[in-house]
Image 1 (cartoon, rainbow, N blue to C red):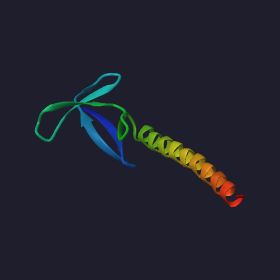
Image 2 (cartoon, rainbow, N blue to C red):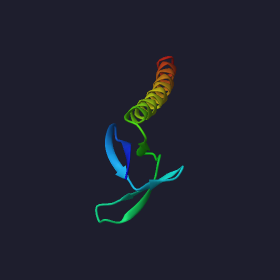
Image 3 (spheres, one colour):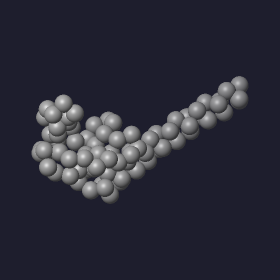
Length: 85
């Protein structure tokens, strides 16, 4: 078994996988069957170290903060336009 760190929903879980490719991991599910999962998806990602998983979560949240800042700036500009009417 290979030890990996799964970053999911703002937390990091240690897990074991059977094997991996560049883009997928293979693990055993709760029913004892082998299942394939993408290493990186919208909601979870698998990493070799805890530090890599943490860096991924931080980067993902920084992108979200930047996106929200842009939305807030546009909303403030729109509000200023409405106040100027």
